[in-house]
Image 1: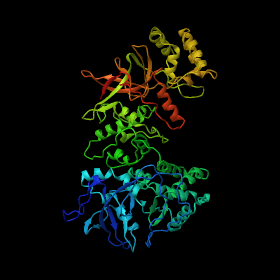
Image 2: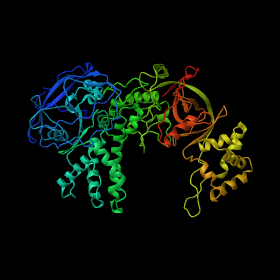
Image 3: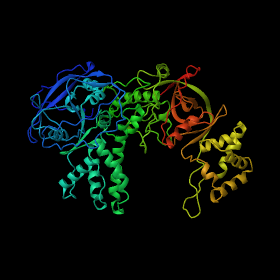
Image 4: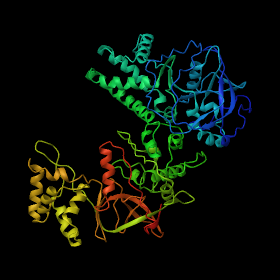
Length: 640
């Protein structure tokens, strides 16, 4: 959870927390006693047990308990239902008490007003204090689940076990209430109450047409709302996605539904850019940034009934923030549908490298080599043993790169035989530093060089200068490749890192097999002349990549930029059930290797091209059949 230290009763070592049996499904609920807005907050703890029952359809949305609280706005039922085609195919939990689950940003500021829990004073954060006052009814109790209060945050063992119940807690809740915070104070708005009333009326009636002259003002309010801490908190992702019913969104004294709020953001975004003037570009930039966060959350919720792998969850949560880095993984487990791997056990006594190692193994089992292949999306620390994990194979999910789109890279469900085959193909050392995996040997690197053959090109009227040494490709082919019977086709495939057309090959081969001076002149002509843009189009950008030859006659190129020179003696091995060679460097004095990059090698590279082609088309990427390298006699490699 977020807080590493939880508040204790003041002036006493007594605690309101009695031991609960987490393994038997016990959780705590808090009873928020009635009172006025300014009255002290009083709560009672209750221990209940979650039970499980099977269902194949989500229950219809219901209305929240409104009671007679003067601070809660009426929620109309107009257009508040989410799509009827959303279904659950997962177990639904319930308990003997109906309750609402609170989703909110903890914050760090402590409220000057303490809460009474079973008669004991407890300090709480300002955010929770404000939320409880807005949620409290004046004449009846309200039963809630609130993570900061229902879990003894000072008991690491309890915290670890209760986090594993998060999915069940939010699925079994009668409703999920999102507390965004108080309405943001905007000094430029002199009619706050009118704006609030207009905003609420617009959401409830789905009337999102805004007069152009009022659009900047309305957008500023939206930007202020979307900059509230809730939208950046990682834990809210699963809290929103796991809600069985359309969540209630509460901001100050105003209430709406999540579907209405998210739809309004999308609608206004599609019309806003048409009316904003250049003077409003900064406002529009803030609006776009906030909208992306809302869209990401809405996208996750829209997939609530579909399979969600851990790696997909890690990608879509890239903007989520949490105080404890372990929660980058733990905060998403409730969303994950573990098809191929055992679920990760939550344990806050584990080290971060230990948790990242477990998450990497799960990602490999579910997505095969995919997490290592996305071009120009190399996570920090990948293939770098000087990174804090000290292992080249561990993916640092705390600094996963940002994607412009959110890809569902998860596999479909597999039968038990294939799951067991995958699970048995890799194993971890006891210290979680070494990964053992069977692979298919491809070759040993015997010649390598940094290929800076394409960089900047000069066109008429531009300031860019061609830095390409025209004869390097020619000399490399005739001095290194031709004696090894490596064809012009293979060289062009490596240069382009993709399949080639026959007409492209014919033109390239005729130049390459001609004279050195003719190649140099033709290359220059093709860069500068209108009819000769062939090389600029078809030679990929090689900055920071290495091209290499193996003793077995393979030609290849490193896939990721700036991972260090591929050394002679490195080996190419297909790993993780897919025909994509990994470049492994031997560790002197040991039988172990480290991963230094992934390679594109014609004849072994179709899958790496397919992965990136699918991403470029924004399609669902599904890794191919897992190849059992152990069954075909492949060696087991120790990777550190």
